[in-house]
Every structure is written in C-alpha cells, then in structure tokens.
Image (cartoon, rainbow, N blue to C red):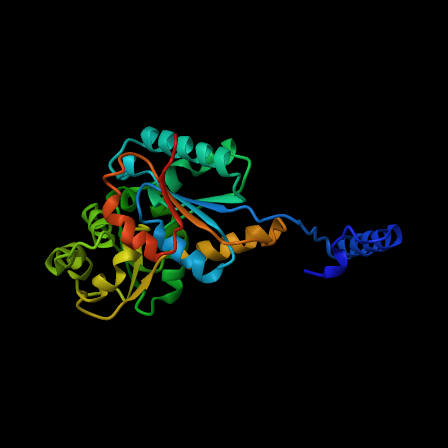
Length: 301
C-alpha cells in the first residue's frame, strides 16, 4: 500500500490536505478504494469435512485470507436428506455465520447443498455466495480419449443439474457415472486417522472400468473425495487424471475479492466450527490442528 495515502497525527493541516488530494486522484484514475481496516474473513460451509479440500486450495492460492470453516456435523450427511431439509439447514447455518462474523463472502462447499440451496442463499444474504459443481467442463477439456468418469454422491449423479452440465460441456464424451455414499463416510474416517481397506475403494471405483472404454479423466464430484485422492489413485487399474473444483473455486474467490476491492491487513487466523456433539469431533482435532486451525469450537446456533 502507498504510504502517501496514510494519515498521521503528526501531519500538519497542509500535509493532510495534500495526502487527501493524492488519494482522490488515485481513486479517480484507478477506481480503487483502499480500506484501512482488517480484512473480513471468508466462510466455507459444508455438511462435514469435505470442504476442507476447498480450504486447502484457498490456503495455497490465497494465503493472506482468514477462513471460518463450518461443518454441519449434526446434519451430516446431506446426500440422503429431503431437499427441503438441506435448504433449511444450509440457510440457517449460513445466516448465523454471517451474523456472527460478517464475512466478505461465503462458499457452500457441498455439491448437494450448492445445487439445491444456492439460489435461495443468494436471495437471503447480502454477500457473494460461491457454490461448487462437478468439474465436468475442465474434465472434458482434459480428456484425450473423450471418456470421462464421474464419481459423486448418488444424488449428484442423478440430479438434473449434473445432466445439464454434461450435455452442455461434455456432449461429445462418454461419461460413466458412479454414485457412492460410502466414499463420503470413508473420507471422513480417513481424516480421523482410521485405516481404509483398499478393497472397499476398489469396489467403489470398479464400475468406472467395467466396459471396453476406460476413462482417462475422473471427476471427483463431491468435495469429500479429494481428501482420499491418493488412496483412490493407488487402486485404479490404469493411470487417470483426477479433476475437482478446488482450484476453480479459489480463482473465483480471488476475483470476487478483487471486484469488491478487499485488501488484506492484519493477522491471518483460521477457525473451525461445528454443530452437534463435541464427542463426534474429538478424533478430528489432530488433523485440524495440522491444517493450522487456531480455534476449534461448536457453533452457537
């Protein structure tokens, strides 16, 4: 930041007037307003810990951001729930988080919640809301064989929105779709330090490789799944490129912050909040601490 814009108590009247004039010229010429305040955090919301894959990409690309991560552990998993229940839980938690932390923006880091709740969340809340969708478009751009695998929850695989994405961005590809709720739970167990039986992973991905035409690119269509990408890679019968939404979400967040002229000042702090029982979270503490969360606490809803 240009020091010539910063006012000091030692400045004379003429010095203050000169700085005000310099700042006015800067604003008129660049359209940029500099905020002399600590940057607001961003919120990442998910039904469980899957959104930590988004959190990791945010930290890699935007290390100056403070993050409030919220896991609706009490409502986990969202996939089998009626759509109205998912919308109600998502809006309730997001409203509480916005009231409590006044974030710059929020990410709904859950494919199920995004496709169902995103329009209503954007109507209700006066901040930018970023959703996640299966990375069909980049997978189509990557695949050389024009054969793509989609590994997601059963609800995401069957949802009309997913079919629309495939039709729009991968119409010339064969898309092999596999829905798995079990993999969501395995990802949660893996983050808790539990051993995952490779045989269980092989059974989940086996349908992707049944036919004569095997995919060379697999979309991880649930934010939980990148957490076990290395484990999945160890059991696939042929080399594949794994594609998820993390990097695209981080780029979108960066663009939105730039559009809103949000500049960083002050320390970076990450908080992990959850709903429900404390006992269900204890086994996660080592992994969360390793991810630099300075506070782990229950969200007062």
